[in-house]
Structure formats: structure tokens, C-alpha cells
Image (cartoon, rainbow, N blue to C red; front, side):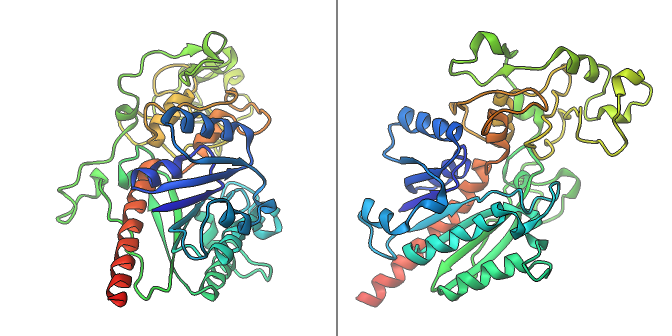
Amino acid sequence: MNALSLFSGAGGMDIGIQQAGFNILACIENDPHCCNTLRHIVEMEQKNTEILELDITTVDPQTLLKRFNLAIGELDLLVGGPPCQAFSQIGKQLSILDERGLLLFEMVRFAQILRPKVVLIEQVKGLLNAKDSKGQKGGVLLSLIEQFENLNYRVDWNLILAADFGVPQLRERVFIVCQQKSERPFQFPQPTHRNPQHTNLFNSHLPIYRTVADALADLGPPESKNKLYFQNNNHIDVTTERDRERINGVPEGLWLSSQINLPKDQLCNLTKKDTTKFRRLAFNAPSLTLRCGEIFFHPTENRILTPKEYLRIHGYPDNYILKGPVRSRSGSVKSLDQHRQVANSVPPPVAYTLGLQIAKVLECQHYMKSLAIN
């Protein structure tokens, strides 16, 4: 089964899709650091996937048909997680007034030419309420569905919590599945893990949510940035001395602004609303959703989490290596740094379970087609 990946980022979606049995022909991504990450893993695993460092809006899908010797309708799967900032609940929520919001509809443009059998799209929860050009709440999703239906696709969507599938993180994302010429709804996978606080007769056989402690177990102390920055090691501590001072005294699982007993020069200008700034994770619970802005702090050590710890919490394989710069807690670098590469990506275990379900759909389609021929 062949797949094409758009907005590939650091490759989280691609890992799961490949584990489910798909061969990814190409990854299209315009961030240089993400592309270096993807190139490294392709070289390391000796795959034949092409990494195309391009602006998606400049790519003609017709050229991809020729490049990979595909007939229209022959591609099994088109996957992508377009930029989410325009729909994010923690952003300005400009929706399609933000040019990044329009990138969602690049998935339609590619599907119109390639006519893949299945399309898989990932987006933030804010898409469900994103307003269209007329101000209609939820209008962007309705427009996306309508455009795919006009191409003869059946569209189903579901809100998926990563913790339900073995990822030690309370991350919710919308997944949209478009099936070509299908009358049956897509059967989204059932959870493989359960919230220990919501146990009932039907899920008691499932293992409980994985925790931060499960994710970070057996990782030794991180190295300093100066020592191993240019080597294949993402377990690097870049915490500034001032950040170490400010997080000191904050209990596990809590945040600095909640500790009103600490000195004023440690609290500075933080308010009660600053619940994600200078926040420690808790060992005995899943992580909060990993963020692209503020990096979370280690549960007990006075430092921010390393990119390697982000990878563990996101469910990446342990041999995965990120390329590019490592920033401090709230610093900025050109293009995507290692923490943001992870936070922007789809947790591989979630993509894997979806990939397995899509593979079943394709197998069923192939079987029905063979019956019709015979």
C-alpha cells in the first residue's frame, strides 16, 4: 500500500502509517530542520522515501503522478496535518483569515488530482468551531466536508485522545477520514488504554493510561548543550540559570504562579491565569499536551524537559533522532526547533491505530473489486 505525506513535519504521522504497513513514497515539508530530521531517519533505515523540501502551494500534484508512475486513483492513502495555528484555541483563532488556515484545503486540491482511495487529515480541536468567511461557527469543517463530498468521498471525523492509545499525554486532536465511493462510515479504532478514574464493566480489561514516569523511566541525566549539541543525542539540557532559580520550590505537578508563598522576585509578573508557564509535569499522571511555546519542566529536577523526553512522551521510537537547534524554555529560533518539531507532530501510536483501520478498509475494497471482476 502506497501513501503520500503532506505537511510531514518531524514524521510522527509517517512513523505510525509505516508501522501499519504503508510505503510512503514521499514526504512534502517546507521546514528545513524537519526535513533534515526526515532525511536522517530515511538514511538510517535505508528507506526509499523521497523528502521534498517545498512549499506545498507550489507543488503540482500532476507532477507527482508522473514522478511515481501512478495512475489517477491508484494512490492508496494521502495523509497530512496542515498547520494548526489558525484554528488553535490558544491562538488568535483567525481561521481562514489567516493564510495558514487556507492550507487545510490543500488536502482537497491534492485529492482532486490524485484521487487517493483514502485521505487522512489531523487538526486541532479548534477546527470544530472555526468560523468560515460568513462567520458561521463550524463552517470551515462543513466546507471541507462539502468539498470532499463533491469529489465523491465519504467523510467521517472523530476527536481522539492520545492517552486512549498508549501515549502518556492528554492530547486531543480531530482526525478526518475520507473514503472514496464508500457508503459505510469509517470505523475509528477503539481505545487500547483506559482512564483509571473512568473504569467500567466494558473497559476494565484494558491497561490504564501510561504516565510520565512510564515514559521517562531508564533515561539517565541529560548532557549539556555545549557537549553534545552537534551529535546524535536529543537528551540535552538547555535550561538557563534564571529558570532553574524560578522553578525551585514548585511542587511536582504544579506551576509557579500557584505558589504565592515564594518570593516576589521569583513570581515576577505571573498571574493566576499563567498555569502553563513554569509548570512541572507529574510523574504519576499522563503529561498535559506538549506545547510549541512554553516547554514544561521535569517533575522533580530544576530544568525543562529535553527534546528526548518530549519524544518519549509523544510515543516516538527510541532510535528516532531530531535534527536542528534546541531552544531554551521560551526562546525562539528560526524555523522549527526540536521541541516544536515534536509538539507539532502526530503521536506515532495514534497514527498506527488509524493506519491499521485504513488498511482494513483498503483490503475490503480490494476484495470487493476482485469479486466484481470475477
